[in-house]
Image (cartoon, rainbow, N blue to C red):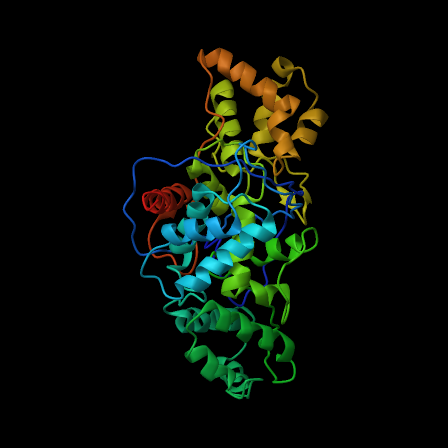
Length: 409
């Protein structure tokens, strides 16, 4: 799933239901450094445009088992060379990153360390609790829109928000002084519990779905702890842990690296998947192959099926419709193709009969082997984004930061 603005998709004061595709079984090959850095700029968190799947992580295996892995002390020294020199709380970042790699059983390599560092830098500029300008304006705007939708007078809403909250301040004061997503999450948690008792005439649910220094999905974190032991003592809920530097770093590294991605050493696809959803880059390449075979122009978004309440929808997706046109040439039944597509969020889809037969035909038609990975073409949307951004922009921006990190070896 992740944490892309995935990240921080703040659907403020709305109770939109999300759906989740099927489960994943992660592990990860070592990536390879790239060559041409892309200049960094002020980071903009990314919105994850697709639902976050429930995960079943497995230890990441190193592709060079004959080489003795570095000790923890050697890994700490390597990470220390790779981290930017001027970041605040540098030693704490080193400890949190290394602890996450150790707990998740991800090999200590420069490529892995730089991948995590690049995403942290992009998503939060090395802030454990990222400051987001204008949160108060975003919240009040959404409050007014929701009150208007329910035909409620704003004077009644504002009166309710003058009541004291659990931290002693009024809810209005807390909204007016919001600086970080962690503060916003705590605000909504309190509002969800106390809306009725303070007379707030709008039902409240916590709409914040991503947070922390890597903008990881709360849903991903909650599913991850069900199948992989969380290594730290918890002071509150898993959601609360996501909004800490330590917990947010741990879950962010898990969704970035703890799965068997099929991209070899090309890191840009890992970053695209972090933004768009695991295996989205692989699935976008499959959609491109279908377009070539059918002459179609479906969006290369990496989503192969539609979902409702976590289950495949009865409404066929563009990918399924395109496959239907090819059924006679593929020699597969509609039921078999749908079964294969239901594995779209797992490594298994890449070896399914549908995948193999589509690419065999597409390669033959093209006279060459087509790419097995493409960056999904997705526009990013969030109340915090004020210009046109895409998954491709995000992946390349993070790749530039990765290259800069690798140069520090």
